[in-house]
Image (cartoon, rainbow, N blue to C red; front, side, top):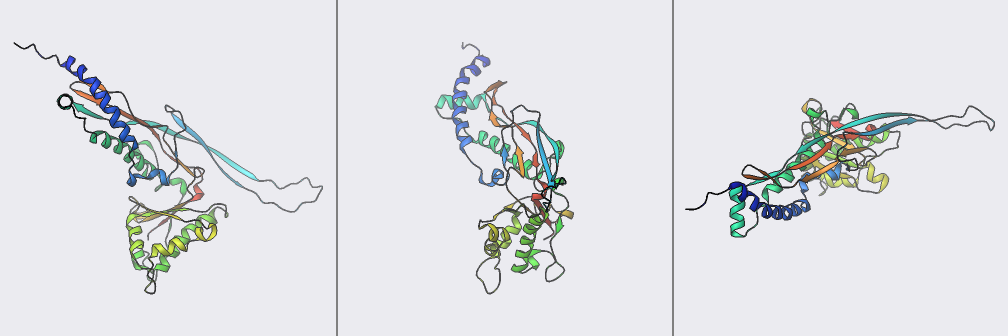
Length: 316
């Protein structure tokens, strides 16, 4: 008569196999990039804070001054004034891991095959999706605001009318669409006393697709996007290309549920997303008849440090 199976001993016996497999799986997971979740290309990510910091403190400054002629013996020298404000961003812990069942592990060990990696990939992607959402849309449960809906930026202006009363790009010529984009870029420059220039423009996916597939005019083979990439105030001033990206979540982000475009200078001086602890998998744990691999990370909100270097345009 066979001795009864001791599940605890069986679980422990397979633990070394699971540990070896997960180490290999996780190396592949962290090498993989998700091109559709490229938040770090548009929002500078800061991982410099201590992984267990409760808050991240930063300062914003606004100043003004005007030089003028003075007498060589004058005592009333013009001075510049600066206002510095301290801000704190809270940091919270979040998690997403994966697990394997006892039978699943035993079967893989018996056959000498590796454990499937899809669960780890899904866990890692879930982390990337959460950071993407916090970066662009914020999280009301933690009081976070994202790039697309940040109250620090101030009130959004609506796009100008077209040839009719409609502001929608589908009712405008290529020249009027280019005007809308350049007005947003120039508004940022004017609002900062010509000290800042927007080098990045984020549009709703649907609007980017429209200008990428619509001719600028009947006399040109170029699309509206082709024209804008060549003839925008940032490129004309600096000789550098304007970064134009399409993102989901902007089609109804504007006032009254309208479309919103975001123009800003993409620099850590202007905005930062704090991720003090990047997603990491912890050692394998035995939980009942499962081998669980916990995944944890610590995430703060998006700080817009120079609000005047970000501009919203709605209703287009």
